[in-house]
View (cartoon, rainbow, N blue to C red):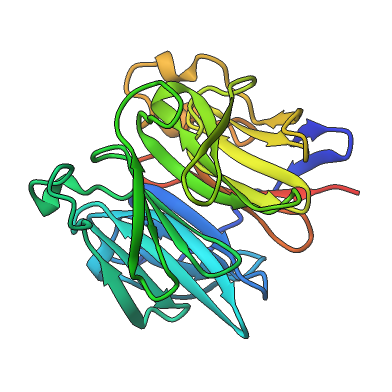
Length: 305
């Protein structure tokens, strides 16, 4: 079963993830790959972080404290080490950990009384890290703000608020530091506005990208390309100029089916997506997609020569 076209043609790897019987996935929200092509799945279950090798063999799991709130996941290369940045909707936290789950620091709502009257209003959905180590947090399900911190988690600034004008946001669900140009900039998946909004690293609005998007969730940069999971049933790939290369697994109007996204297996064809929520790409160009589904859904697309 193949998807894509041209240089971006992939084969669906059937039954890729080989999980032990004891592990039952919840909503699969995040996926990243480390320097050894190990794949980390972030899902709402007692095994919130599941680690697989590139062939789908189970390596280990951890993270029971994230069982109810697992959402965004970002892997950062910092010096000789790699770290995970995790967002927890249930506990209203951003957490930095080692790859084995050792907690290094936690962040709750910033002390902004005009924005947050309680910790519960802080609903972080994603994290990005800049080349200088600065950390950016999306409050996508809360107050629609972006928060900027130093590498040591010291607060610097915030911007946003709900709206559709430049600088305003409606469900800033995902964030990424785009390093494809002369200077890094921020990409924000402004999902409620069905667009990508671009900012400087100090929060100044640059412009919007609206073409070829449905409900963009987040980003993954692979070389000069950006991969975007569209919640409305496809993965979009842009070139370095943010022009469309291809859509993967497009499944038009599936979101209109009763019960979406929690459709039965009979409505989940292997070459079509239902609700892509996160994506990553390994060193060989293979693509891993996780979907917003109550039983979890993991897909590997192996890139063909």
